[in-house]
Structure formats: C-alpha cells, structure tokens
Length: 473
Image 1 (cartoon, rainbow, N blue to C red):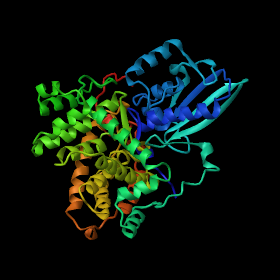
Image 2 (tube, rainbow, N blue to C red; image 1 turned 90 degrees about the vertical axis):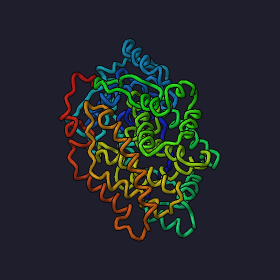
Image 3 (cartoon, one colour; image 1 turned 90 degrees about the horizontal axis):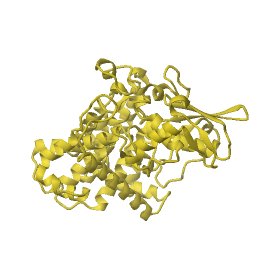
Image 4 (cartoon, helix red, strand yellow; image 1 turned 45 degrees about the vertical axis):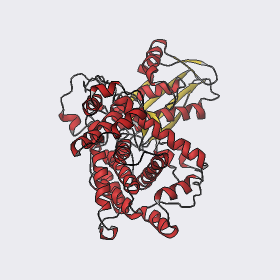
C-alpha cells in the first residue's frame, strides 16, 4: 500500500519535462546530499540511458543537471536568469560543491548519452559517478515520471508508508470510504493530507499551486515569439488572447487576477469557449516548452490540462471564484492522479502519452465533475471516460522536443476532460459497464504491450515522419 500526497502529484517546477528535467534535477540534488556532502572528488561524470539519452537534449536534461550542480532549485530559480547561468557555466566549466570545493565540470564532456543502453529499473536511468583517490564511486537513479525519483539503494530497507485514515490503493476503496462516511472526494483527501500537515499548510500550498498555474497561463497569454529548439514553432496563446479579449482590453490588463475577471465578464458562445480552453492549455505548455515555471500535473508535458479545465470552470460559473472551489478541485485532481501512479504509470517513457495527457485528463474530469455537483461515483466515472478515450496514445515528440504534438495535445486533453465530466453528470453510475479500476488496469497492460518506439524515444510516429531541419536537439 503506497501513501502518496497530492502534493507529490502537483509539484512546482521548471519545464519542459517532469521526467527529463525535474526528475534529473531532483536526482542530482539527492546525489549531492547523499554522496558528495563530505566528499572531495577530483572528477564528476553523469551518464544518461534509454529515453533520457534519446530525448534528453530536446527536453533540457543537461540544463536541469547543470542548474542542480550550480545549487539552484526548480521551485525558486529565476527563470529569466537560466540562460545566463548556463552560459556562465559553459565558459567557466566550474561548479562549487556544498563543502566549498571548486571542481571542474564541463556539461559538454561530462554528461554522456547512451540511448542504445537501458538500465534495468526504468527507461529513464542515470548513473552518477565521482572519482576520489583514484577510485570511482557510482550511484544509479531513475526518473520514473512526474518528477518522482528512486535510487537502486531505495529498494532495500524502504520506510513503511505513512498511515492514513483512508488508505486507497484502488478507486473502489475510495468509493467505499466515501459511501461509508458520507464524504466527498475532497473531504477524504483533506483528511488524508492532515497526516502530513495541518489545514493551514494544506491551504497555503494549494493556493500557491493555483497561483502558479494562473501566473503561467497569464504569462503564456502575453508572450509572442518562436519557441526554442529549432522547430520554429510559433507561440499562439498570446494571439488567441488578443483575438478573444480585444487588443485594447489586453493593453489595460496588468495582473493575472484582472485578466481572469475580464474573461469572466465576457458572454462567450460555444466556439469562443472552446478557443479559451485551448488558449489556456496552449499558454501553459508554451511556457513549459521554453523552460518556464509550471505545475507538474501530473507531468510537465501534461501541465496545461488541469489549469485549463479549472480556469474554464472559474470563468464559466456565475458565482465569484473562491478559494474553497479551487482547493477542492486541486485536491480531487491530485487524488485521482495517485491511483494511476500506484496502479499503472505516469511516465511517458514507460507508458506513452496515455500516461501523461490521459492521466491529466482523467484527473481534471473527476475534479470538474465533483465541482459541478457530481456524486463520488459520477466523478470516478468521469475519470474513467476521460482515460478510456486516451488509451494507447503514443509519445512521439518531434525532434525530442515537447512542442509537436505535445502542446496541442494539452488542449485536446482539456476538452476531453470537460466532455467526460458532462457525460458522467448525465448518467446514472449504475449503468456504467467499465470501472475506473478496470480502465487503469487496462492502461497498465497497454503500456506494457506498447513498442518502446512510442515511449518518449522519438523513434516512431510523428517523430520520424515530420521533416526537421537542423533542430538544436
């Protein structure tokens, strides 16, 4: 029985990839803490394997590793200073360890890529080595999706899981607890989260997550230009924002909250609502693709789905948006994500894009359904519907970048989530023929059966059928 906090599913970090950027970043921080804290090495070397090696350059893995070695943290690093930090390291080729030791490190020479080899624990494997007194000391870490990191030495003597009042390994167990005690999903989640932190801390972190999401959408909707990487993908969210709000109104909006209110004051029809949903999702993932700050939900590649659906909900409701609505939405979404993490995967390198966009769409569908007054059973059905229609989706990033087809897929996932919630609200749960547990089990089986060419390796699908002229990756 795993105990996973919703704040492990909803993390604040830097794009473009939770498994290829945030995970390696956290792995280097662990390595520094565990192996380099008191060491005085004369050399460091980092080797990436499998999917990390095949698409790591396009996904910014070397940048994440370098920033971690420079002592930066993904939650607090100045995103506008990243380019200068990396440039400075490339020129100086020197880092400083926690003990104060200055050490030569050249990202071009000391980060190795072995895409034709895979470590046994996961497709996203890393070997970190330091040399001291002429002898190498190596540790292996895996980035297993969503910014989660495990090490080979974690597999023995693991600490017991946190005891929770409502331990849920399966959706059916969540349903039974809620039925027995008359709980909404958000109420069950809060009761479990109190095992880690008090209500004030829970609310503070939920508010920070939402503010980060809103800031990312706002920033993405006010930035034009070409995304980095060599594919020459043009940002679209800012242009859509101007078209939908009007140039004059856009020029008078100076904050994310004012922007949200301006959208709420519109009376959009179906077509403009659909465009707003896409705009919200595109904005997040355009920021993600340019090393912007996003909320991993449950991954960076799928970071736009949940904020887009939540923003849609806040902009389409008659009552004023309130903190309780936002907090409950995020708690339900986070809880649903834990079930996929426990029983299938949230790693595209292990399960394709169904593990990213599919899971995020299911999370958002359940959260929206409960927010609209749906029962627990209807909310779980909404998650099932959303995932059922993402089964088998491949991860085939063109040029190893999170741009094509990743950015648009967030818009598609958001729309599917809203549709799934509405379908669930219009149906009696007793009529459903497929349960959420069954679709999660099916997703896990599909992931196992899927060719590795379609698991974030850029060896199949669109990645080999789209002409790419000299991408930076």
